[in-house]
Image 1 (cartoon, rainbow, N blue to C red):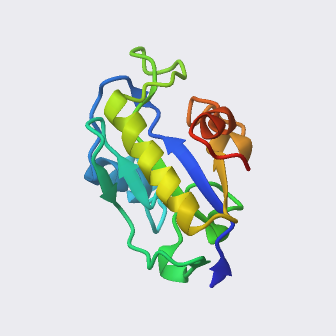
Image 2: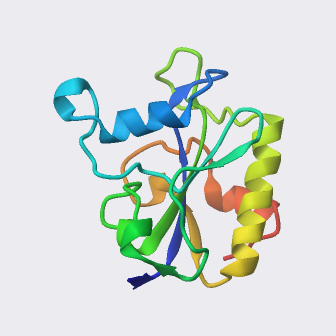
Length: 154
């Protein structure tokens, strides 16, 4: 068990408007490498925000300020033991390659509610984008600027 220190925001890096299911995410992350997956033991995210704004729990947790071994997800190398991870569906332009903030109005509202609620429960936990701890475009928007726009100044 470790103290929760980060909430990491992600995107699925899928083309704008393309729906993604939790089964797909699980397959991408946990299928053997030989079968096109990453071979992980656990999916990479605690929660997923669908195009319509629905928030789906992928890995259960007890909502406390500790990361129990059964709550660990594989969202960011070196940060998984001390983080929770939330992903929104999208993050790429229609070409499937170019990073783009593709959050729908419903996703924007759902992510805002999610983050504000999380921050109210865990004000000492730092909220970051995956790109702040890895050389990636994910989540395809400036998390710190967005946080300020919704009233969170870390």
